[in-house]
Length: 281
Image (tube, one colour):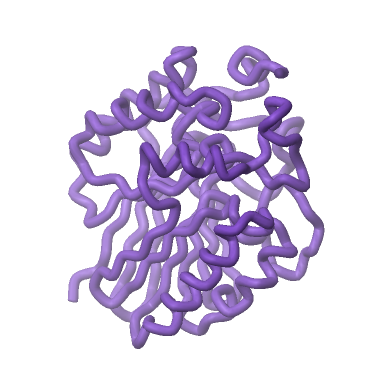
């Protein structure tokens, strides 16, 4: 059985309101066109600020559709909103996740979770912003995950998510912007502890990092759009270079991950244009 080859990109942060970050994304279209991977997965923050500006959704969808490839999308916090315990509600232009924002995402991109069986692997894509949100869909997603685990059989398991489920171990219970809500994560214990789980691949932190937790590879995908300095995102052991990832999932459960980038990519720092692209509302 042939291995499953996956191209993962993340955090494209596209918008019609600015040409910031378009250059790298234009080059990424050519990469996607030339891709012969079995699957292409986008792990969220498709849009620059889709939670506040609906125009970002059709723009991003049309921009990336020029690649002519099927892309399996997951939402990021800039697409559906942040943890409500860390952010203000939508009613005051805050960034908190809400049913309205989730519905808007689904109108343009379909379901915010998916399952793909390929070869000897099952790939799960989840909406990490639902974790700990307290919204109705959180329990529905948890029940859906349990059904996928119950029917896994002898397949190996790979999880894709916008946010990492944890930085190094799931023991840290501090609520931060950088990972899923630790209270909600407790309900994912059966997933994290599943003996067939071999890969958790995420975006969000705009750093590339490869670590392991037990038998699980923890792979952080860089952003295509920009990275940050430590003033915005603390040091967590990642490489602050834009790029994307290639995963090769082998029949025996091994995972080979390779960070990739074009030499022409511009390594922009959000710190240099933060108030331009994300004004204070």
